[in-house]
Image 1: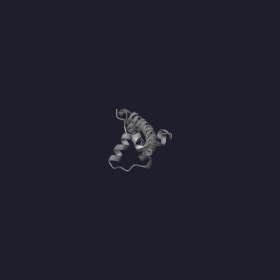
Image 2: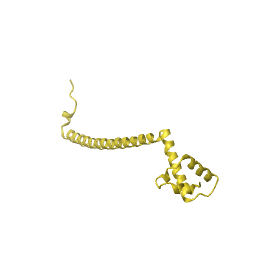
Image 3: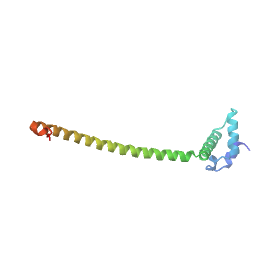
Image 4: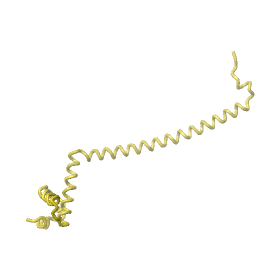
Amino acid sequence: MTTNEAVAKLPSKQMMEITDELGAKLHHRSVLGEELSETDREMLQSWYEAQDRLEAEQLGLASRRRSVTELEERINSLVQQLSETIRLNNEIAAHNSAMLSEIVALQNVLPSSHSAPVAR
């Protein structure tokens, strides 16, 4: 049975669920440089994608991707917290600077005898 005959017998949803045997045959034909029909190329691509998913599962890449996503979310949350902390620190620094200016102004208004430390 040819590949096209095999495809013709498959319902459309199953067309993308290719057996390893058929996928390997299509792969072999492809690497040998044989001309593949559009249907054969689609089936081969589907088989490659299934193989990639299987390999990723076996290597635990799916859970790593999830872990990376969780880390990125945590980092984004921490960046937001850090931004808020920086904003608050800038407000405090501005307030402290204003208070220092007031202290200097008050020291300039007071007589010099009051601002000098008292000797005992």
